[in-house]
Length: 83
Image (cartoon, rainbow, N blue to C red; front, side, top):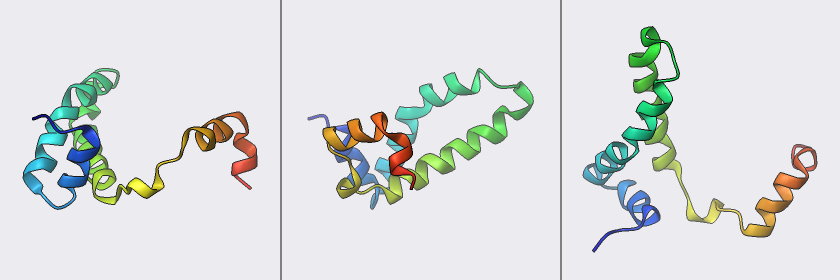
């Protein structure tokens, strides 16, 4: 049975094998973004993006997910949320 992305993220927080699977899963997107940069910087950026992805997965919390109306409010009134 296939795990949802949310389930994989939650599992990856304590399972390095699942973490590696997630990083591999996001690799096509990372390489697509890298193709828009200079070849000179791509290797460094690849490492930075992998580290950032790792940190995002480790620090992710289901409780921090905004509901639809909170998200809509933050999009419609971006200045209000920065005060």
